[in-house]
Image (cartoon, rainbow, N blue to C red; front, side, top):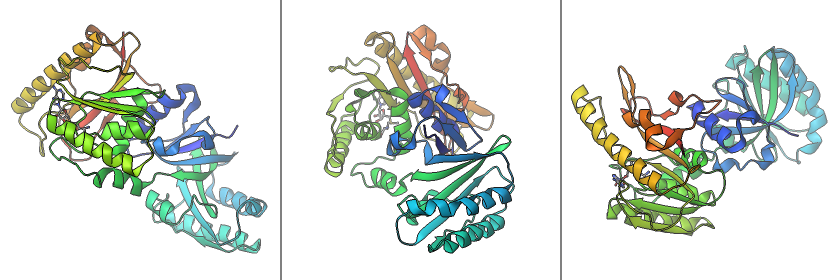
Length: 388
Ligand SMILES: C[S@@+](CC[C@H](N)C(=O)[O-])C[C@H]1O[C@@H](n2cnc3c(N)ncnc32)[C@H](O)[C@@H]1O
């Protein structure tokens, strides 16, 4: 069976939890900070639906040596045998190096060595130069390195050896930007949930296709990603305006993509709403409270945290009343990034009393599942709950 090598995103724990949720902990092996090995053939991975993985590659071989020079010699020696599988035309060549002792200048020099070997075998080739040890998604995309005449290698140190892999997929940054910025209705006040994070939330909640309920649906980013993932989308929100926004955005989505799922939207306060339709899982970003551009006083933060906590506690009680044991939810709840550390929602300490067990992951610590950008005060903590 082919194995996959994955390059994880900026916060690797999020990508690891997502892969573990989809493929199971035993199939996943951490290689280094950014790299993991997955016992799944890359062709059977629906890559566009992963939010936390930046690149996917097919494992070609393992080498029992961590010297960059010997890896390059190996590639230069073996590459002529593989060129027959690459269609006619100019080959584009790229390298990503993780954990090896090789400077950017050395990587670029080595790429020229490999280029020489390819030319000697009668094929023309252009090297995509490195400015860092790995190529970013834009370089891979713009140079079509995952296309039929692209050849992008991953060389990753794995203990006393090296994994050599060929990149098969890269995250489509243009498609993400289009799904984010081109939506007709956006609202800075309710926050801008990045579609990638919404994908992770959906993947942590739902392992089978079904109806995904977002009880704080806002402008509908989670519902959008759930629909693109083949689920039915069911959203509710306290504010009628948000229901209109979600409807407009999901109508827009249906014109751009072929969707198989249904859409249902209704107004409702998540703390006491009786959902009118059945649903299989809950996935959503809850109410995050007041946005802050700088850390507020401890008093203000304490008040906001208490108010937001009350809403969450009531919501979780209400949800528990309407679901059965085993029911699963993934929520992005607020966590406040302060100079003294991260402040969590107090309710997370009494989930058992509310009727839930918080799922933990083998490959990602729960404390690492807080998504935030440098400088942000309000982060989002991903919590996966199972109804007891
Ligand atoms: C952080 S926003 C979610 C944004 C959403 N992920 C999106 O794609 O736009 C939180 C949403 O919760 C809604 N909200 C706040 N309190 C609520 C409550 N008690 N019940 C239901 N919705 C609530 C707000 O109107 C807001 O739309």
